[in-house]
Image 1 (cartoon, rainbow, N blue to C red):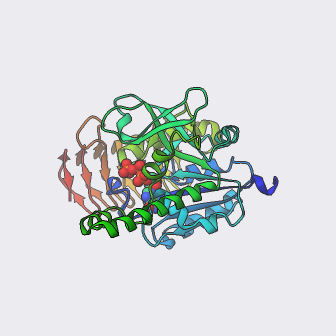
Image 2: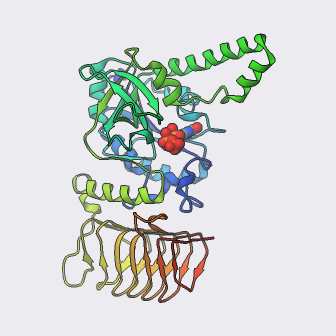
Length: 413
Ligand code: GTP
């Protein structure tokens, strides 16, 4: 361990049940951050990346889910990581910067010199040690991970302009209506503790404005009270935009992979990216199909050790099979996530799909999706039964349904 000035903590924002609504129906009973990508909970990927930060002393998950939803995962990952991981529950959403500020005393308990802040719903290689090095050289209050995307897609993100030489953040706009730049914010940051002073500054400004309105007119007061609550602070609009161009924020560009994880379809794509990354980070997690008795594996596949897959099944590429799954003879699985306790019976086919916990797919049945169709991949919620010889195409099936007739392009409530 280095000197106390070197201590680093990481904070991962996990949101809460009112966030991530586009992730339904697979987030009805499982918090989105615990949904498995490449066989590991979504939040596991950024936490594992934190392992590579020199002098990391603590990892905090901040959210407004109930504590019990994270208790099991947090205790097992703390043991695995050998660094304490704590879940901190907000009493209500405080926004991405407000949540960090709310727990400032706990975060500063070990007097860290640097604080990483990561959005839980981004998928990337998290080049955290390199970011930290760059941040120390820049000498600012914060450094953002940024990436170039296509000009057509940039307006879905925070667009920014950076000085090509100094890498200083010069301009920042969240989801602009007119094109600003193809350089975007990845939702991964490193800050010095001065970030808390910057957030405090937002509160103070708001308070001053509210007081001014109070004495000017009833109408002004009304408009002040209509705006966001005073303790709700967004990192992008309230901190990054106003501090751009003030020599406090800098950028570190990644040329590696980066995606957001907002919908189940995006989760399936990100599962593929993480499986590909396992070749470098965790090759032991990739299934291999060798020997006459083992199943045929194509491309990158994760299979939980408790899964029972018939030797005549063919699996992959991009397939993740969770605990206690049973796959019958002759079944074919391509580009799918199969969650705990699912049964896929003989000769069933699953392509471009997510199969929810405890669901069952009958003999000679098919569950297939298509990214180019309106509903995209096929999603079966928890405990869905697809009976024998039934075809489910580009459809979303809500939990506990039994399908005994074929469906196409439908949302089955
Ligand atoms: P959307 O496209 O609207 O989803 O916005 P975004 O991707 O910019 O996300 P946003 O800034 O709302 O959130 C970034 C990250 O912070 C996500 O991982 C959220 O789950 C998380 N987050 C957002 N608001 C809060 C909050 O009030 N508290 C906590 N703990 N996390 C939050």
